[in-house]
Image (cartoon, rainbow, N blue to C red; front, side, top):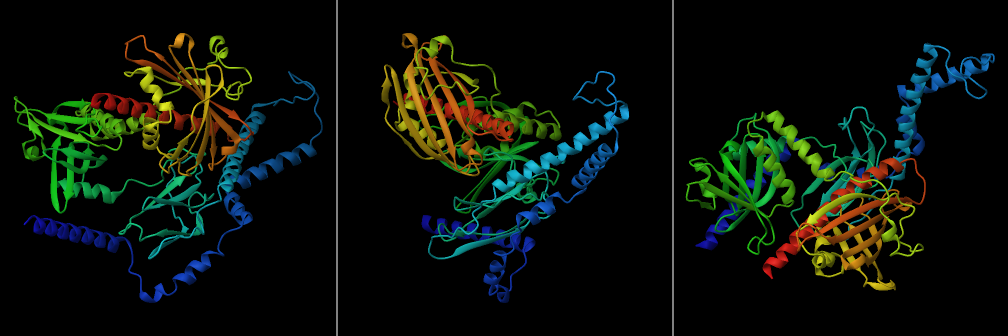
Length: 582
């Protein structure tokens, strides 16, 4: 009987899913004739020879009114200088300094300076895009069976994130966890790629292909997407819960609903409602309630039963949300329904967004959307730079020899993260011992093939080791290999440790131009006996000069500020979970 129910549910669920998929394809794509399929190889072969030369790209990119007007103005001024006679020195002028003699001359100089600045920005972005010409064009798939071949031709009327900025778009394709990246183009509105990429479509059939368009803006960071809000996703949200067209989706999070059994699904947030939807073998679970129905929101710490994940509990007012009571785990003595959600991909981001929307439940939908955007920006930045100045004081400098390879004399190191953690120093230092905790945390934070060497003494009370790993595509769109050298030594009176680290990035734009320095200072906390204080400092040493130094520094600082915060949050959760289960 159970077998028949499961088979029937799966059959019905697959049928509905493929019907929706077929309708969506029919609305957006034309059916391909069998005659055109035979010409596939000919079409792809023509793309091999359609790449534009650098000269053609430069001509197309710079042939615009800004560049032409600037060239004409510069030539006009140069000819004027040649035809003019030398003037006598007057006012505050002296030999070598010629100041404007009228307001008109000052305005002309300012206008010419602005035009030259705009042209300089165009040239720098064009050169930067040329450095990123390499792509996955020509990378062949290695599997047996069907091969998914993608021909990326061009883009038309791409949206720009900022109307005043030039964008350098590139495309990222993701299929079965594998990523292919196109080259960076310099044409902001209608880029021409003419590139071919391949995937193994039979690796985990059926395969789904995700396509995202990004604007290149730095060596690696969470690059802003040029994709707009999906109308299909918003209409699906309205259809699932039977909502009117004016109800718009703010955000959604994959999570599990805890009842007698865990049910994996999605939590949808709009300006008015909180909704949950799941489809397990064709058996659908759907409910929603209003933000005004929520009386309290509680966060339960991770336990063994929750598989190390914090739990978000939404408590409704008495007599509210009765239509959604089938999704509630329990009802307290006051008659209030309680809904338990856990296993969020990023619990901190989801909980902060939900708390922000609940606290502003009396605001208008437009105000709520602005608050969510501000919250997302805050999550991306995480922590702003707090302290400037050198961190190597006289006492600490005496612990490390001046000739050590990990001294940060050339790096402008400053404190950018500090926290009081409810764990002892010994537990937190397990992050640096190469054991299970370190590998687990670094794996969750996006590090692949993470390997470490053992700590070896190099001087009295000074130990050194080396690390190597690779960033996944969620951390860096370009991937990238990382090699690190770390040294650790105890603080005076054995009240903590200092860990110095030099990181080298490989396989990212301009990775050979700089090294990143970190300093972790972990010591006893004055607030509690079983707690510790952690200060992290960072600086960049430039090995080669580049005109993009300021931009790269800003992007790296933002990336590692967010990354270090995530790593220490994971460490706190893992250590507390281990202690509670032990």
